[in-house]
Length: 270
Image (cartoon, rainbow, N blue to C red):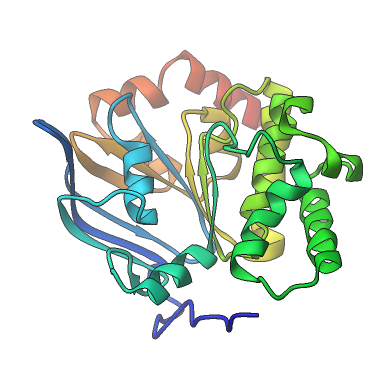
């Protein structure tokens, strides 16, 4: 088994686990981000919101190293995320789990085989039997029944596929979890159950969660802080109450419209 890298490096407990400064992303003439600054604190669930085209997923992909930004600095777990050092890149990859919006499961592999993909890549010396047991553990941790292990993604409901994707994201026990619209396409009951699962896992495992969402119920239920992308930058990163008080057109429409009032009422009834 490969030795674990020092995920924190010289990172102090009070230093941000993700640090973004002056980030610029563009597609041709279209500038998506122009000077984005963002700190993500260790152990928090941060919700990232913004209108269509504000580049929420682009920001996530840049932090993960899946997209090369035009300018700016990004540090993840105390490591320069733009590094070309292969060992440091693998260190970041081994310590971050990602759930993409559609689950991004391999359709020809069973759920168990999907969950084992990261284990096969980063822990090649593990016995087959142990990989199987670890996959089963992660599947149960994600709230799936044991018999989901041998099913193909096409045999699962949308909510179960998301949980399978979550199980794979947790395969390497990462301290940092990225979720891209995790409740998109779920009915309200399924979305609420998924929110509770994320919060339970975050508390039990001490995770830091970077969560892109448009779901107001998710923001009200589990997010410690909210980062708002607008005007090509992060215009606020604060508690929900502080963000709601912002005098910005998009914020007013999003946080004070009918859907927001319904989400607030639902929280007050709990």
